Amino acid sequence: MRKNSPQSFLKEVASIPGSNKISECIQCGVCSGSCATATHWEYPPRKIIAMVRADMRDDVLSSNSIWFCVSCYLCTAHCPRDIRPANIMHALESLALKEGYKPPTHSPAMYQSLVGSIKRNGRVHEFGFMFKYYLKTNPLAAIKMLPLAIDLLIHGRMPLMPKKVKGKDEIKAILAKVTAGGAQ
Ligand code: SF4
Ligand code: SF4
Image (cartoon, rainbow, N blue to C red):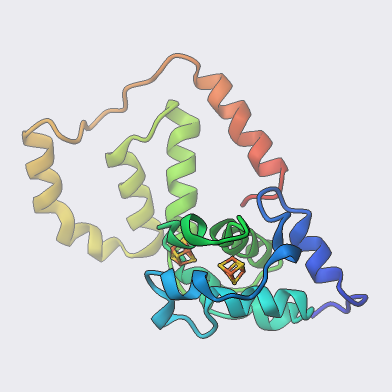
């Protein structure tokens, strides 16, 4: 992987919107203690932050840990320094994707289908978004979900066709700005 000057990884991560306070982390570990899924992580959130600061670029971006963040934001609610570790984990996911690291979960496909649905319709169209997600990741699982989908359709809880909203183009423009800011 690419060679960096000392501390360049820290600067790179700190420059991503939402991750700018990473240098102020006091390594108290409250984020790891609060984290809903940290028991499954190779390195818990506190350690990931320490590794970014130690310039361990490849170890961080190739680790499965960043992909297990489920955005519960408990770390962010409890952090005494307002570091927002969840934002940092998502910034690292984006960086890893951009650089071609292979994620160990289907979460990027899920996010991409979700954002695609919002871009097309101005809001999430559950049926279309789930259909695309399963098509990309596991079409067989879609067949297993069919009875539930039919039930939801019958009861009007999941419309087959998307309802478009006003201001769709503005929403699309906001998403384009977010992507230009580094999100994948
Ligand atoms: S809770 Fe906040 S200050 Fe403490 S280790 Fe986690 S990110 Fe750093
Ligand atoms: S938002 Fe992510 S990193 Fe933070 S506590 Fe939840 S799962 Fe853990």
